[in-house]
Length: 222
Image (cartoon, rainbow, N blue to C red; front, side, top):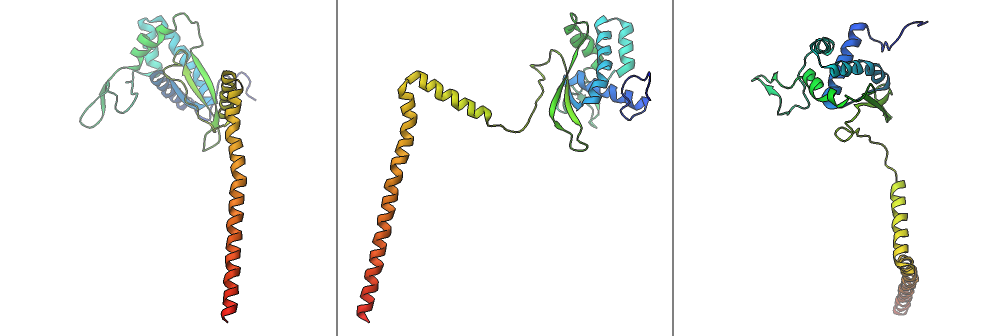
C-alpha cells in the first residue's frame, strides 16, 4: 500500500525523474508547449509552476534557486535559429539563456495570476509503441503563438452542413428561383435519360436488321 506517498513514480528512480522534469520544463519554456503522455504532464506541472512562481519574485536568491533546479541552459528553438552561435565543429557556444527568458519575458506575463500557469489538452490519439494517451502541455497565454496542432480523422459532417447552409441561403435570396435553379439540372438529367435509351434501342434494332439481311443474301448465294 502507498500510504502517505505523494506524486508520480513513473517507473523511474529519483534522479532520473528529476532529470526528466528538468528537460520537459526547459522544452516547455523554450517552445511554449510540448506533447507528452498524460501522467508525465500531470507530474511536471507542479515543477513548472514553482519555477514561474520563483521567477515572478525576480530577486537573486530565486534566480539561483531556479538555476539549481533546471540549470542555466541555452534555448535552442530550431537547428537554424539565427540567435544561436556555433563553432567550427557545430557545437553551440552562445545563445539566449532559458533562465533569463523566464525572468524577463515569461514571468512578467503572469504578474496578475496567483497560479495556474499551464494547461493540459488531451488529444484524441495514442502513442504507437504502447498505446498511451497523449496530451499537449502548454503555457497559458500562448494560444495564438503556440496553439496545439491536433489532427484526427476526416469527417464529412462539416461539408454536409455547409451545403445545407448554401442551399438555404440561395433559397432565401432568390425565393422560388433558387429552388427551381437547383431542381432544373435534375429535371434535365431525367429528360436526357429516356432519349439516350431510345437512341440505343434504335441502334440495336438497326444492327439486328442488317445482320438478318446479310444472312439472307448468303443463303441465296449458296
